[in-house]
Length: 404
Ligand SMILES: Cc1cc2nc3c(=O)[nH]c(=O)nc-3n(C[C@H](O)[C@H](O)[C@H](O)COP(=O)(O)O)c2cc1C
Image 1: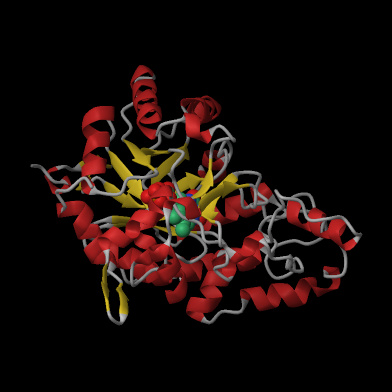
Image 2: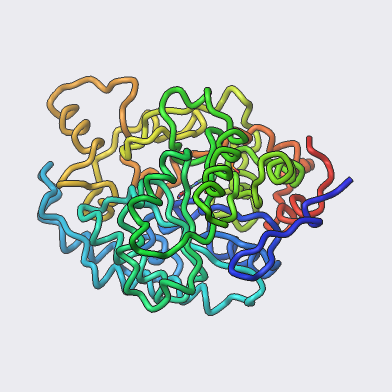
């Protein structure tokens, strides 16, 4: 029986195990997790979700504190139109954070950054440009454009000296979204180096509507692979969402024409993952029926999480002066709901949460649909769960021969 190690995928002329660890915000994909995979010759993502806050924690910088002080005067108002991120400070903190990680790489694998279009930060294009370019300037191996429609992102990077040599990938959930991207960016003449097809079983935000159950990752991957061929392109396509074993990855390669897979949920419980120990245990104890797909995220995208996520019922004061990553045109859907509640409106079933604060505090327990299977991969002794290292999980994908 074959194992994933019998397979390779090629990115810009280099061969890799056909597996990527997807970015998990906020700081679940810690630098320790990403560097552990990179040292094994693998590919792993940092997530740039709330990066300044992550950097403050890891490097002792005070970007968030400075921002809070600067914007304090707006805290009493629900109109945040004048709240702006200091782009120079954003560039500086991104540069420091990414350089600090890249200083520690072995050169065997790749460190990519998962950059989300939906982090609107009250200046969607300005902040996106800063985030994309500072990551490139700091020397990360590549950028995966995720969570949103990145119709402007190539343009925002095209003057960067690393625009051609860095790896650039895109996450889509349909051929339609890919086609839109290809059409809108055709004049730029920069081809994608890889495409990640995120299916309906993935963790984090979903690129599907309420009818997500009607879609199957395998079918979307086949469709995207076919479309890429028809466009005369030669771009590796990776499947993501519910790929729990090396065998699942091989099935995507053999049956759907994928080049490999992007995975995340199995790494949530790695020793190096940023989730607090008690949350890792909640993931391990979870059952299939504990998972929900809901409207809690103010991004407008559906999100998968555990039903017991504390953020679902919490009503906290919005924290836009410190964070504000969801602000667009001076407001955010949670801010609007909070204002209405202050005026007596009743919290509805599909209410939003203050995603920034709740993600920062690890109170949104987002996960892929396979979270309830994690317990099958981990030993439990008298003293509790024996959490695996990132290397053990990686090697299980790499050398494991069981599909169950
Ligand atoms: C805890 C968690 C956090 C995630 N955070 C992000 C994120 O910040 N940005 C993003 O684009 N995708 C995010 N994802 C999606 C993953 O990168 C990945 O594509 C997907 O979860 C793969 O499916 P799997 O979890 O079933 O393996 C997250 C997934 C999980 C489980």
